[in-house]
Structures are given as structure tokens and as C-alpha cells.
Image (cartoon, rainbow, N blue to C red; front, top):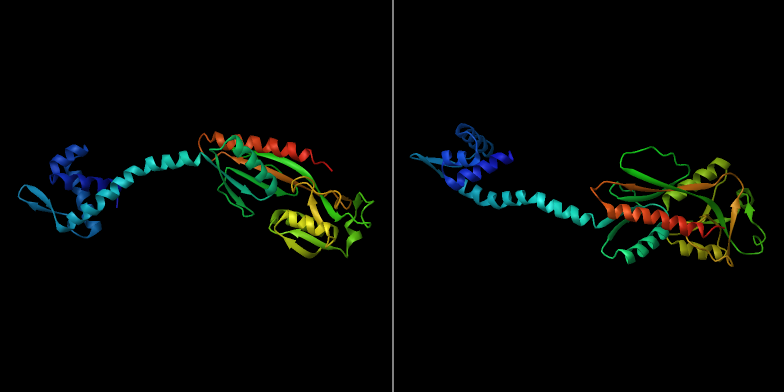
Length: 294
């Protein structure tokens, strides 16, 4: 069923006159008659009947006209509604956060104070293709140039967080082979970070015994400080630690690090607000993380 045929039907139904309707629609009368007949064939009911030289709506035609007219007006209004929706979307920045969630959340709070009318939609720990800005992590990132995409790459070491007990107090570095019997504490939900750590451990022939998991970095810190176990810890992006209770040791078994990739995808026309937050976010994270150097 073609939209143009519905428009033709509404015009003919209003006038109940083929010649006048064809003139109003700026089409030839035979073409209009053919379109109406085709519509009737599709619906399998007669919409008009002849009354002398004029035509009248059948009962089917009256019902169809009554139901179709408001729907057709709604269809005509769709472009305007979509434009309004797009304008609203340009006031919302869509974030897909797969890494450094606490740092990104702090950046959002700071930026909201500067731009109170800007909204944020956050999807965390679940990969999505519908985003303006994504934050993810991999072990070794190789950039592939893409049109309308900007990437900011930040590298950080992965360290071993241990309780500040006599066993570790004098240490600044450690081999994982020294802690074969230690329990490990993990941040649940950080899938990409866990995959990086598992891959590194596999390369050096080391396996972890997970004794405790939490979806909160603060709880993980408390568990390590309490001596329940040790855990892998990114150098900057999970926030500050209490150095009186936890030590961060360099792992000597290889180049244990990860890349954090912040991607801005220009998927909306003139979305200056998303690009503005992207520029702020990269500056904010770079500045705040470099202040935390171990």
C-alpha cells in the first residue's frame, strides 16, 4: 500500500469528484483512477460507487476515510516530531562506560555543574553501539582510522594491591610467582579489565585463586586492606588508595599495562555538546590521573 495512493484516496473522498481531485493533486485523471482501483484491489473492498456522473463513498469507503484521516495527519507530522526529538537528543550525551567508571562519573558531576541543562545517559559494563562517547580498555590498542571518530588513548600500569602488613611493607615490586598461594580479590563486572589480567597471567603461567568478589572498588579496597587477599589494581583510574593500609607493587613478570580508549563518535549532526564533553573528559582524566602517580 503506497502512501501516495492513500493521499489520493483522501482527496477523492473529500471531493467525491475525480476530475476536481485530479486537478487539486496535479495528476492526470486516468492515473488517479488507476491508483484508486489499485487501492481497492489491495483492500479487497469497493471504496467508491458511481452515482450518475459523480461518485460516492461506500460504507467501506466511509469507514476507511474515518480511520485513515487522523493516521495520515500523524504521518505528515512525523518529520516535525523527529526533528524535535533530534533536538532533544542533542541535549543528551550518551556514554558507554566499560572502564574507569568512577573517574568518568566524577567528570560527569563536575561538568553538570558547568552545564546544568545537559543530560547524560550512561550504559555501564555492557557494550553498546548507541553512544556519543565510549570508554573501554584493552591490553594493546592498535588504532584503525575511522571517519567521524576521534580516539584518545591513555596508558596505565597494572599493579598488585597488597595489604600494608609486615610481609609487604618493605616491598616496591613483586613477581606473581612469589604469591602462588595468595587469595585474590576481584572487582566483579569489570569484564575487559579481568580479560586483560587473565591474558597476562596465562602468558606467564600463573593462575589466580579468587576468594572474594565485589562490584564496588571501595569494597575491594577494604577487603585488601583487611588482609583477605591481594588484587590487580590499575595505576590511576580506580581512584585513590589509603597508603597507610594498602601498598601498590610493580609486577616484574613483564610489561603489565592496559590502554584506556575514549572514543567520540560524531553520529549526530552538529552535536557540539557531546564533543565539548569529550574534550573536557579527556583533559579531566589526564589531569586527575597524572596527579596520582605512584
